[in-house]
Amino acid sequence: ALAVALQQPEHRNLAALTREGTSALGTPLRNDILRRGAATAAPSLAAYLLTLRFGGLPEARSVAFASVVATQLAQTLDAGRAEGGLSRSVLGAVAGSAGMLLAALTVGPLRDFFGLVMPGPTGLALVGAGALVAMLIGRVRSSERPGVPAPAYLSATPAGGGI
Image (spheres, rainbow, N blue to C red):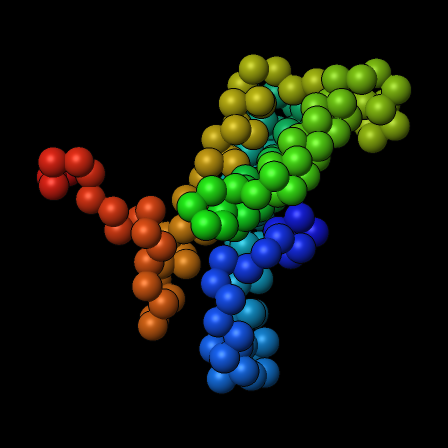
């Protein structure tokens, strides 16, 4: 999150910021926080419940932990797009965090410290699917906000003009 917050703004139109004033900190900010929270919680809870049913409690806890982190990292990558690409600081921060997650799941002493087990292939697939779903939820919900145009990557038509 710090990498996204510290990167240069995509647009440097500061006059627009003064027009918004403190109203930008009210409902729009609350809605964005709720949207991101739902995009994290829903896929993570679904992955936890599915793993709990088919894999047991220790694996379900590990899948839940990994899902929360992975959905947050996926949303950070999505939000970190600037000037048509990702900044190095965002990529570095996400890669470092993903590496720490991998270490927490695979390195024995770290895994024991956090009380985790290595998820099986199904658990890892649920973590990956949850990260993708989190990005999709974030994109769909952000395009539904009135008065805010959908991001270009949602409204782009495929080559050839058809679907």
